[in-house]
Every structure is written in C-alpha cells, then in structure tokens.
Length: 479
Ligand code: FAD
Ligand code: NAD
Image (cartoon, rainbow, N blue to C red; front, side):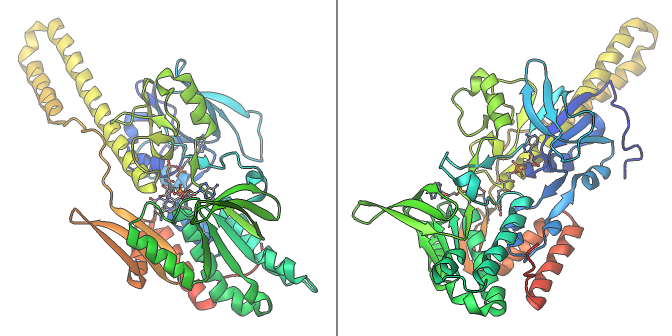
C-alpha cells in the first residue's frame, strides 16, 4: 500500500492538517491517521522517531543509537496518501491567522531559511525541554539525556574521563574527580542511567582499564527523600538497596544549587532538619531533573487568554483540544491533560486523535453527500425515489459512525532498569496493581521493550546489540 505519488500537490477540497513533532504523540497519530482525508504536513527538527525508553542504554554503547531511530520518511512512505515533511523547528503559532512560523535548523542552508505554513487544523506534539530551574552553570557544564546527541555526548565524555584519568602521572585527586560520575535527579531517567553506567564499569571498564578501576564512583543526587517517587514503596526500597550493593551512592534530600566546570554544589537537609552545604567534584555530570515548557509552547500559551493559569504546558480538554483555541490540539509532554509526561500517555493520546480525525473526516464527507443530494432532490422533482433512497443510506451510515468518546488514559504500568540485570515494575494486572523486581522482571523489561520497538528492523537491531555487547563487551572507542 505504498504511496505512488509521494509529492502530490495539496488537494484544495481537503483541510490542511499540520502536525508538529516526530515524537511519541505525533508519530502514534500519524501511524493510525487515514492520510487520504487531509493534506497532512509534518514539521520537526528531527527527521526520525526516537524510542526513548532505550536511550539510557545508548550512553554506554549497550545499544547503538541508530537501532532506536526510525526515519520519518520511511514511516510516511507507507501511508496511503502523500504526507509532506519539513525538517524545521516551529518558532511561533499565530492562532488568529492560522499559520505556523518555521525555520530551518540544519547546518546546510538554502535560499529559504524561514517561512510560514498555513493550517486548517494543528496538532502540537513538540514535547518538552530539560528543566534546569535557572540553576547557574547547569546548561554550560552538564549533559542532558533526552536526545540521541545527548547520549552520544555522554558516551564520549565517559571515555574521555577514563582516558584522561589514566594519563601518565595524573594526580590521585584528579583521578578521583575524573572517575566520579554524578547524576542529578532520581526520577526514572537518572536511575536508569546510573544503573547502565555501573554495568558498563563492572562489565567492561574495570577489565580493560584496571589501573584506575578502584576510583570509579557513581553518585545519584535527589532533592526528595527517595528516588523513583512515582513507583511503589517496596520498589523504591528495592532500588535503593540494589544501588547500595552496586556501590552507587545515593544522596537524597540534597538539592543542587550551583554547578561549575568541575564541581556540583548542593544543600543537604540532615535528619535533625539542619541544612549543610556539600560539594561534589565530578568528571561527568548528567542532569536529569525532568521537563520544562518549550519556548514555542510558552509563546502560544501567552497568545491564548484561557491558558493564563497553565504553567506546565498547553491545558487541553477531554478531546485534547487546546483550551481557548480553535482547531488546535495538543498531545504528549507539551499538553496538560492530567497525566504524567510519559511515552505511554503520549502514544495513547496520538492514537486517540487519529481515531477522532478519521471519524471527523468520514462524518463530514457523508454530511456533505446528504447536503448535495438534498439540493438535487429539490432541483429534480421527477427522480425523487432513487435519490431519497441514497440519502437514507448515507444517513444510516452516519448514524452507524459512533461518536468518539472523550480521551481516557489506560495505565499499563511502569518499568525501569536499575542495573545488574535487575528491573522494577509496577504493572496493572486484571485491574489490580502488581509490584515486581529482580532478574525475572529484567527479562520482562527486555521483552516488553522489544515488543514496543517501532519496527521489526529496530527490534532486530536492538537484539543484535544486546547479544553483541554481551559476547564481545561494549566498544570503548571514544568517538
Ligand atoms: P517527544 O517524544 O519528545 O517528541 C517531541 C518532538 O517534537 C520531537 O520530534 C522534537 O524534535 C520535536 N520538536 C521539538 N521542538 C519542536 C518545534 N519547535 N517545532 C517542531 N517540532 C519540535 N516514557 C515511558 O512511558 N516509558 C519509558 O520507559 C520512558 N523512558 C524514557 C527515557 C528517557 C531517557 C527519556 C528522556 C524519556 C523517557 N520517557 C519514557 C518519557 C517519554 O520519552 C516522553 O514522555 C515522550 O517522549 C513524550 O512524547 P512527545 O511526543 O510529547 O515528545
Ligand atoms: P522526573 O521529573 O521524573 O524526576 C526528576 C527528579 O529530579 C525529581 O525526583 C526531582 O525531585 C529531582 N530534582 C529536581 N531538581 C533537583 C535539584 N536541583 N537537585 C536534585 N534533584 C532535583 O524526571 P525524569 O526522570 O527525567 O522523567 C521525566 C518523565 O519521563 C517522567 O514522567 C518519567 O516517568 C518519564 N520516564 C519514564 C521512564 C520509565 O518509565 N522507565 C524512564 C525515563 C523517564
């Protein structure tokens, strides 16, 4: 069912549906959308979909980054009708003129760098950016863990720290600093990364660079009293005790206040309530303190009076319509619908919009046929029986199209890898909650993520990477 005319001109009889982003929300929508009903335009600075759950594994080379990327053009090629893709970033949305301002973010520039795209319907699925809370030094000195480029930067930096620590006559204090890997944020991103890092050290670095191995240290800093606040109590305890065995140092009730090129400065609250300043020298610093609103979303919120009180993103109603706007919907991390910012939520929201839009198009097409036939009926009074039968048939079809019920999120559970081939899982089983942890849960984690991978190609590549790193070890080359 491949589209034979990939770059067909827009059909003036159809509405133009513009979709911003190629992440979990937008791609789930695209997957199920009947593209024959609209002139569909996708705009994103990233010309691929990224399977974020396995991104922490890319930081150490357990999984190669291309194994979890799926080119958007491959996804679009399998659609029935042509979809246009522009690799660009949306800088502003004008809801009054119904246009999106976009600019080319690539290194290669043509004549046209910035332009406008008009829309009849708009879906905002641009995700979120990294929260830094304005803490000095974070942007300049730390690595984030959101995009492929971040994972590549971390992988290179780990090896840079190891090789520099192994440099001839390096002072013991400097070796200690360089081999200290600090992670800020004890949410699932920080925990999974710390686990992957410790595995890398235990399974590969220790064997290949033994002379400095006793100095390698992973520290996880969290502002709240425990890590993984969204998981159940027993899984939090399991994670914390596993980290203790793995020799990952957890510093809870510790709030980072400042970052320099070599140190993290934090304030720790002691058991008696007193506060104390602590400094952590580091070689690698990974910042994983959650999400912040993207500028394009903030700008749109400022243009819509009904969004005045929304802080964490575009407030949407139960049909994911942006409150106070016409013909704009939002999905995923940039939308505030009352759910956690997860891939699970974003993909269900995308699926919901696909159903809604497919339904809207079918309803509109049938209604316009009924209107057309009704006017023919008035003009040709002689041929009424046949036309009336046709109208009845279309009306019957219209009645059969069920109204799409409001969006309802169905939570399937939460999973996180914690290192040493162990995982934690809070899953929903027959309407009840089951908490599981350990080696078997790790196998479940692996099979669940393999089945969730975007394509068979991704699945095979990920399995191949797992086997490769187990048999031959991870690749320690720096580039
Ligand atoms: P994203 O997937 O982030 O996609 C946003 C898209 O918008 C991207 O294509 C981006 O390039 C594009 N974009 C950005 N700015 C613009 C712009 N100005 N104009 C146009 N396009 C733009 N969730 C889970 O449920 N399970 C997990 O195991 C899990 N693991 C995770 C691991 C990591 C390391 C991270 C960082 C997140 C993880 N998450 C997980 C959370 C999950 O990835 C997000 O909730 C999900 O990606 C949100 O989907 P989204 O479509 O809103 O945004
Ligand atoms: P998060 O918001 O879940 O956690 C960030 C943590 O950073 C919080 O616990 C917060 O207390 C801490 N923090 C904030 N400021 C701090 C400071 N100055 N000093 C010390 N600690 C500080 O962020 P995340 O882990 O990036 O996750 C983002 C979203 O993605 C969440 O919804 C999460 O559920 C989802 N996610 C899920 C998985 C999974 O299911 N396996 C993996 C990664 C991310």
